[in-house]
Length: 313
Image (tube, rainbow, N blue to C red):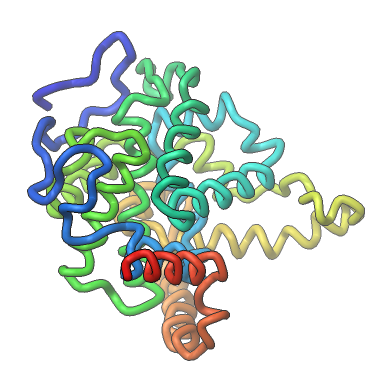
């Protein structure tokens, strides 16, 4: 890599794409007016995917692929309430996603600032003994990197696969989101092909089966959610057993095959598993498009698309 991160911060990951190479359609940070697509427009694929009810099927995959990064996993395991209060974290992730993707440009910028402020003091040593800081672009940027792959995979697994042109549009929107997230153009792949090369490189050389990944896939009984605080502990434990098994199965089913193969020694994925989930995917692909819009698209996404369309008129 031609321009590694300042060693005073610590380098947890080296990326294969060159720094200082801007997207052919991008100008300065935050300026999407000169680009052919806008993540906040009425035809935004970012809004469409964020409001698609099928996106909930990808929740486990998104989080697991983020925390499989050595530095991200170490920070979550050592410096968060992930194990003791997962429900608050899930609510926060959902709230942040709504603010960032579905509440307009100003809200997106403000949420990006808030997230950078929250991560300003998070640092440590990752599972491979390397110093990291949460705002290191190769750490902070990886969290954002996962979203593009997950949206493409959402439609490949549970809908109509995106065309190359749609992937290119989504990539442009993803870079716009990255700038609002706090990344520089040089911190992101310059082209869609560079992105996929980088993603494959990370799976092969960096992502790992760490404590957080193991915890997620073993699905131990979490604390009762606030809404079920009065439920007897024994009943919650029995209730969680099938829910945890379903969560584990869905997460494994949606993982990139290359990473699923990488962790197969811990969590094998059989041909029987694949056949069962292909039947489930077929059911989702055929059923969801027939639902009325208010059941296919979340209310907040419908409002976001309506607002964006009005603003463009």
